Length: 355
Image (cartoon, rainbow, N blue to C red; front, side, top):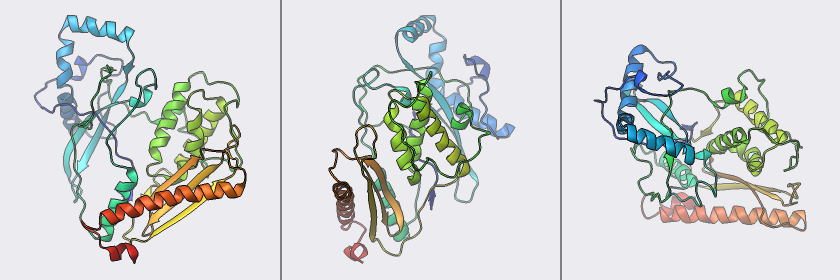
């Protein structure tokens, strides 16, 4: 089993195929609504899904009063951007099961303190998901996918949130946005002795580009453990990024170009034994002199948990930094052990864990 991409959180609208919209009825600068690399027949099927997703927006375009109201809101409020995601869902034998279209809101463009005060979502911890997949491989279970139309079933939204009308489908990715399509690949995501701080170089003219790029890199750490350290370093400068920070982020993109298909490979384990590695980097932060903690944990030889985090206090020695790193790793191990023992009553025996 190979996990190459994290799951996307999406907005889902009501589905109906009797919409009857055409690309010319959608207002906006971009008119190309066809997904890339598809034939004419597939494009028409994608468009049926696209038009059904627009059913709940059709009434707005027919009312002048609502149109004026939206124009007023657009000037006075902060509107989230969005994009369309197209996907072909296939069966186990490779045949096409259905064509999917989802409208995705770019929530990473929101600013804390301006658009929201705090965030909360009752979602499963990703480590728990990896543990469950490893246990499923160990028990030789069959895995099935479950789709949920509404990704926010348990969310109570109290703030007013406005989203722009969906543009035409585009396939622009991080490399295209940053102009790195023709860049030379890099063997490592970050230099070994690179030291950057909050005062490195001049301010970026467009800091939102840096925030979008780092936000996508944070998302990639779900299946790319080797990006944990460089993304931890880059995410410290989201408030006021500098040119040096942008150059370091582009280096990560060059590394991703060298290995675009890498991910987490989960093989069937022979046991559910837990193995952990930890280390610390004493006084690694040039701004606060705080040390870094890093650990990597495997269950039956399958990677399930990894983290790079700055320690909360300044240690007086490298030995103290090492002990703090071991304490953080031990806390994660105790939580994993309690998780597995809680599952013992359901589908795991104690012999599997203690073997």
